[in-house]
Length: 200
Image 1 (tube, rainbow, N blue to C red):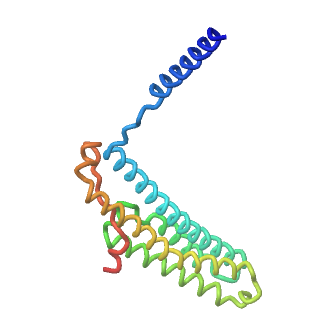
Image 2 (cartoon, rainbow, N blue to C red):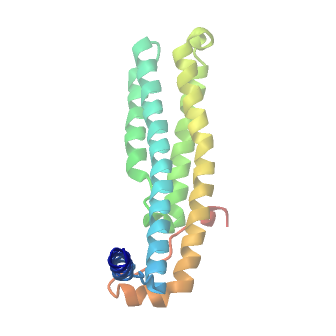
Image 3 (cartoon, one colour):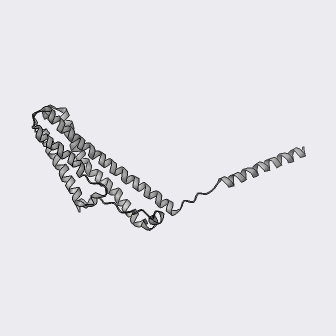
């Protein structure tokens, strides 16, 4: 009986020792350095900026598409001069080419030129549609003009959201520029231009 007890005790000690050994070997602490933390934060901010930009551009694309649709609806009715409406189509095509990019928006004139061209088209096309006698009973024309007007109003909110993220990004670049350059010596880590330049 005593021998059985000793064997059981030794077996239990052996199991405990084996478990202790595996726990210490598998529990390795991961070293998350300051550079890792800064890199992670930088990538999150980059993704946030890209998402805000893409949402803004997608909504603007939908506005231009709706304006094309409105011109088409006016052409189909045949009551307007199709040459005049063709000029609107050309202006809409040009509008897409005029649009700023994340880099070109650093130039105030680029944004102002685009905004002027976009606002003129929105105002003129909505006025043209609403001047049609059938506008009051044509739900398609009403819906398209509403879509254009709402998308035009949303652009301000998208710019405010983009600026808010860009401001955080720029402050982060300023505070961590020296560390970021150590992480990636080839990258420029430039600050992002913001839409607030337009109102300054």
